[in-house]
Structures are given as C-alpha cells and as structure tokens.
Length: 346
Image (cartoon, one colour):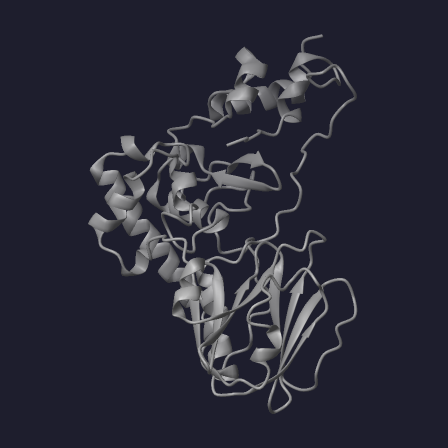
C-alpha cells in the first residue's frame, strides 16, 4: 500500500539529534500534509438532500466554466444542457448526478477538494483560483463549484441516456440496502486489508478514508486484518458497525428540507472517535489514537481497542528500524519516557 509511518519520533533513539540517515534533526512531532476531505456517503447525501428542493423543477439557464480541465466530455456538447429543467438528483457512488429533461445527465465528481456552494441571489463571479464553474438557475440562484487544490481533479461529465450513465457505477455494494450475506460476499471477494476493502469503490459504495476509520474503530477491528481470514462473527460485527456509523452520520449531517446548505464538508469533525485524532485519547479506552501516514493522508486507529495493543507498521519501516521499532503501546510510552529523561544512546 506504500504506507509510511512517522519516522522522527523514533529516529532520535539512533543518535543524538540525528535521523536515521544521519542528517539534520527532524521535528519532534511531524504531521503529514494536511488531508483534504474526500466527500463520502454522508456528505454526498447531505449535498443531494440540500440540492433537491433547491433545483428540482427549475430550469438551468446558464453554465459558466472557469476551468478548461473540469469538463471531461465533448458529446453531447455542454450547450445542450442550457435551458433544460432539472428532473431529479441522484447519487452514484461518490458522484452527484443532476438528471435533466431530454434524457441528459450532468455528472459531478468532487474528488478530494471539490465543493459546492449555493448562492440564492445573484450570479457569482468566477474570478479567483478556486472557482471552477457556476450553474445559474431560473429565479436568480446559482450553484457554484469550487476546488481548493491546484491539481484540479474534480470533473464534470454530460451524458445522454441511462446506458451512458452506467459507466460511472464502479459496482460497489450499497451497504445500507444490503444483507449480511451480500456484505460478507463482497468483503471476501478479494483478499485485502479491511481498510483497503472498505474504501474500494468496486466492493463498497461511498466509503472513504474518514468513515472507514470510524467504522473499524466501532467494530473494534484492526485496519490491517485480512478479509479472507476474518472470522464470521467479526464480519457480522463489521457489517453492523458499517451500517450504524453511516446511518448516524447521515442523520447528523442531514440538512433537512428547510435547513442551510452544507458549507463545511470536512473529514475532521469533533464528534469523530479516531479519524484526525492522532495522539488524542480514544473515547472508549483513553489510550492515545495512533496513525499510519501515507501520501497526503493518514489512517487512525486505537491500538488498545482494535489491535490488542500492537502498533501497526509498514514493511519498509519495520525492516529499517528493526529492533528499534516499538511493537506495542507500552514500548512506545517507554521510548517517549526515555527521551524525556535524556536516556538516548550516543
């Protein structure tokens, strides 16, 4: 999976003020690059529920594109959507679909940094680096699509017909509509870690980094456990936890028919148990929440609740640190205490 564990917390044991490579002193408590939330099932449903009373039945009068990278289709031309009435809002995985008359569909994928803003009065200007597009509806309201990242991964497709729309369905199981047996079959269809399986859109629909952390913590299961070695009772517990966590967050984020439009879609919420809570106490047992850092993201877990006190590590770091790698919470605390006492080998 290409994971990497935060190194400098243990690198000091190998030399006074030096990292593993013998280089400069590294920061005491390094953080990974700031993770930007990928909207997941509860967030996407919050958007669709907020959009439905605002746009269904309205005519889309104008589409203004600020970024040439947003639109990924040429046929049918985007001009064909102009003047069409919105007939329905739906979700396909993590995509939001506006169904228009004449069998046209606008398909939005917000990816990592894409967000929606609702402007009830006046067409917003498209200046600045974050604005991607504006969709102006009859009555003066506009839907603004933004993306904070410079990588511009968000996308917009215009397709015609249900057959063309099906290409966006990755095939993942809708857990809230599934049986225990269907969940178990999807989970064991490939031999992956639980973390990877839950976030694979071909296996499960709408689950990403944040809510998979919450689900695994609720189920008290290690993110590194392999799916095909999971006992039947633990698979059933994971199914129950997945449904419970998603349902709770869907209810919590539901804007209601007359509620405000969702403005702060983020993976870091104070009500979460472990995601984004590195080194903070687990709400169940009080042990410090741990993390595995990879790319621009981090995965969080409680070693006491989920791994029997064992710290998770990727292969490369375990080989590199060898005996210096702390295997348990006890070894981790002893390592920290030794550094505070100054018991660091020369």
